[in-house]
Image (cartoon, rainbow, N blue to C red; front, side, top):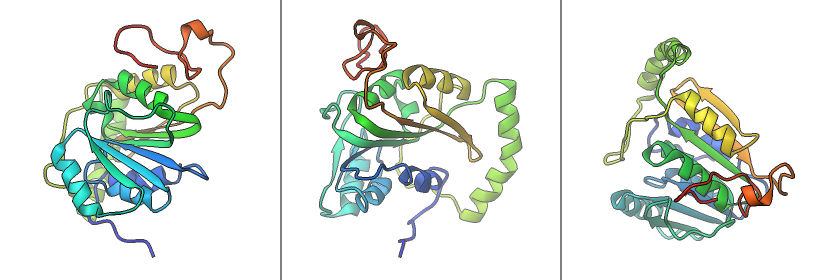
Amino acid sequence: MRTPDPYWNTNVARHPGILRQVPPGCGDALDVGCGDGLLARKLAARVPRVTGVDLSPEMIARARDLSGERPGLRFRQGDFLTADLPAGGYDFICSVTTVHHMDFTGALLRMRQLLRPGGSLVIVGLAREKSVGEWAAFLAAAPVMRVTKAVRRATTPEGMPVADAEMSYGEVRGVARELLPGVRYRRHVLRRYSLTWRKPLTRWSAVPVSSGCSDGTRGRSGPGLPC
């Protein structure tokens, strides 16, 4: 029987969809911006080895306390962009409302680098409304969002880091499509977007090796931008 979530909010609402993207035979999973470890613990129920990483020492301490000594589940405190994590070391990488806390391009390139060929990446993020169309979508969804939050008694764990999004939904979609060719972008009713991508098993022949990265995908030139 499924254990009820200890709390609900618009981030937790995306967990079922994220878990459905875990590939068959997944051996190693990474949760970027794991917070108190709720999603990482759900992953640990179906993946042998799960790593959660978060910049906040308080969140990592809480995640470890709530998770106990679960085999195969570990948490690391540090900056995801510079943390010592194995390149090509994960079959599944996910991140929920975290990438707007860091450099978006750098985060996507780092996740792409850490993902094994054939692995799956799922990002749930927060963006801001800039265009007329984006504001229209927000206003249309606002009544549903208010009612849903009230009915489900939406709460956020105390001490969870928060930050305002700087990029618009359109900007997120454009950068993601450039860095993750074939990515599926969706905007959800509860003011979230999702990016779902499967890393190709082979190099794209259209990308010369000299203009790309060692993982066979196209990179961006410039200092501090890993493949």
